[in-house]
Image (tube, rainbow, N blue to C red):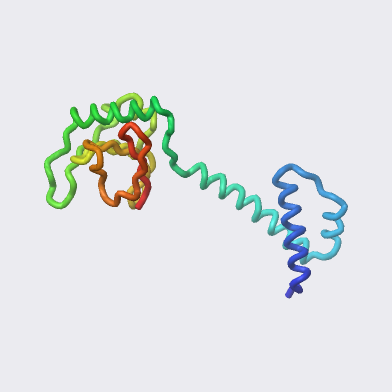
Length: 172
């Protein structure tokens, strides 16, 4: 078992070493001294080196994998207009009992700006038009344009108003 003081020193050295490695730094005399002190410290340092790189890659992957709404006003206006057009031309199908009535819009009929968002699906519901940009088991992320102001599906707290009648939704 490594004494507490030694393990703290090792962790601090490991953190310094990782930052240098991640950001292109060079080894110093202090690093060489730490390496010479023992194989236990060296093993921990190598484990920390791999862990920091993994953590940096995991963070980059998590950020890249998240869906984010646009804030461009002209795009938001176009999404609102194209969804209004879809709600007029693609009415929802008849109700199937407790399932909400909706009409999945085929990709060939997606308007230009909506298609440029690279959605995974576009559907027209009684309440409005849904443009899903990233699916997830419990709802995913995307844009929603209600038929009338305030007619958002439940739960309402998953929707954020982006302006121009366009809302961004996230998973439950």
